[in-house]
Image (cartoon, rainbow, N blue to C red; front, top):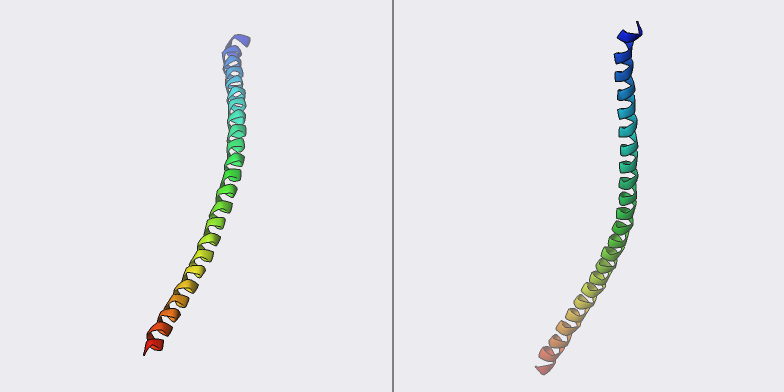
Length: 84
């Protein structure tokens, strides 16, 4: 009876060994992925902060430009209308 069961037991033992090896490799891979994702999140936060800074500068610059153009148009109108 053991001779018939032995190949099945060997096959099961081999399958368990392969599953254990697979789980160890997957655990290492997932840990590496988690580390890369955490690093990517930090980099994304830095990029997002930089974009927010650029947007703030553009808003400030745009408001300054509009104000300057309004002042220039007003000055030109005063020159043109004051010359008459």
